[in-house]
Amino acid sequence: MAVVLVGELGGSYMKTARILLTGLLALTLLAALPSFAKDKDTTPGRLLTGKVLDKQDNPVANAVVYVTDARTRAVKTYIVGPDGTYRFPALSANVDYEIYAQLDGKSSDTKKMSQFDDRKQVKIDLRLDLK
Image 1 (cartoon, rainbow, N blue to C red):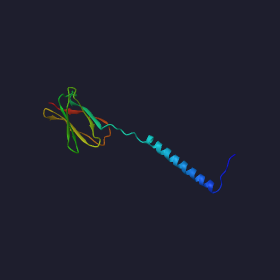
Image 2 (cartoon, rainbow, N blue to C red):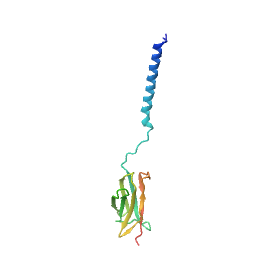
Image 3 (tube, helix red, strand yellow):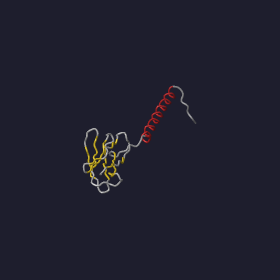
Image 4 (spheres, rainbow, N blue to C red):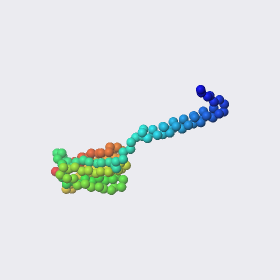
């Protein structure tokens, strides 16, 4: 047998039930919200790699690669090995960088890595004219 509440008591019960259901729906939506949020990448910055090559695409050993922070003018260097490769890990994503190589007084063209380039790994090959 069902009991139907009429009058103020029934209205009060319906109002409370409506508030509880609305609150429950809001909590459910808030709990589901993080699953829709984009996963943040927690890696510590960008990785810059590349090779120092001569005009014939041969690796240039012992060249020095310079990476300059365009904002602070701080410079990082790397002396390449026999395979001509270099690697600068954990560069800030919010900074522009200038990159060039030198060997025996000769320099490559200066390349730029922009803060607006959103790649996590950037590969820039540098060419030296050793003639």
